[in-house]
Image 1 (cartoon, rainbow, N blue to C red):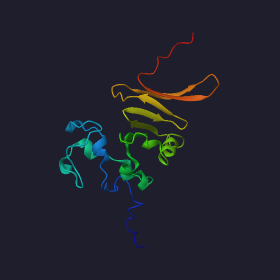
Image 2: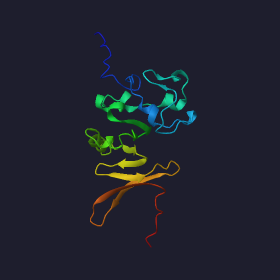
Image 3: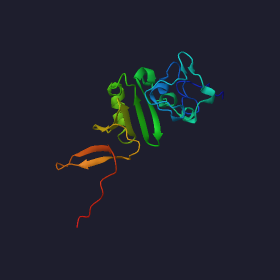
Image 4: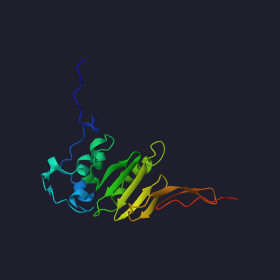
Length: 185
């Protein structure tokens, strides 16, 4: 049996990522401490039509970064960051960050993206979906988005569900410690 040749549309993954092409959204949206580059600021090493001028010697933060569009065969061309106006990356196992272009702060709420983000936060996938848009952080739950305010990297995130008086579960998320447990007696 002859091995099948690689199919660039089907064999996409961490070992065979899609090329970025003209997309440079990560070089504009993400903070790179080693370069003194703030989030939302265009990298001074980004050259139009060429890409990164220091690609061979770029900082570890850049070389280890992986845009999910480049490695996920589930994300079609409409999810390419420069078309969707946001990029998706994984900060930790079970968590994705949706980093939104400040020129298009509501892009993540458009179809088909929003329904997918909500579905990814639900069983059986159960991802923690965080959206960073217009200096605000949102946590996406299957039934609602919760605005968490500005990013507070020095504080832990607390999230979950609260049971209301009528028995309905309501999602919550905020930066800060969870309330201390109290004794019932």
